[in-house]
Length: 253
Ligand code: OAD
Image (cartoon, rainbow, N blue to C red; front, side):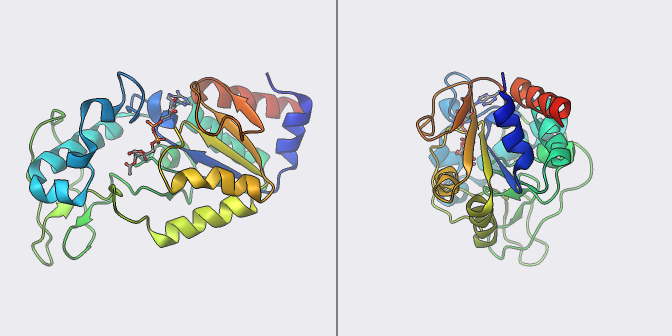
């Protein structure tokens, strides 16, 4: 599946960036957003569930939905793709993971310093004053996807606690964006894995990397706008392709 030239090119890279989207966690049982039938936005309205105005209009609906998603993540495990990306650290001088995912499966697989461009389900904060909120320890009862659950209130200002994810119409954290953009511009190899490459500005990162001379490798079972720009496109599931790649690297190393 992988040519010797391709593998040697990876081993020679000084800085590899791995950029992931919802497809990365699909094999851990976490639904994607836009896949037909199974994607979250096929069944739920992003204007209601992923915007500040949607939250203010129905806090219990929105908080309950994100708690349902957080429960899914707490019960999920990193898949073979996450583990292989952590193993890739052994074969590269420098590996940077940038994800659009709001789960913690890269960290639980062993990667450190992961940039979460779209925030995290595990880091809620006050809607009014921005103070972080710490969840009680343990896994609460699983709420159904549409179960309403009142959000807790901030211990400092009594404002409502909101999910720590970036919603439509909100800017990304400038620190996270700067880290991601710098890594894209500095790396020699850029993996784009499990993302439809439709959501701006994250979707700009692969092109930014190519413009600055990186080789672009895409792993995705379905077509994306990156198909014509990728130097290599492995059509399939990350949980199969990434472990096969790391095994091949180990053989040639
Ligand atoms: P999407 O749901 O838009 O795209 C998921 C991609 O993963 C699709 O291209 C699938 O073909 C691919 N895929 C599915 N299973 C896969 C597998 N096992 N291995 C590899 N690829 C697989 O998800 P994102 O691109 O991440 O924003 O969506 C970007 C943003 O849109 C999300 O971060 C979220 C959403 O609105 C926020 O929450 C702010």
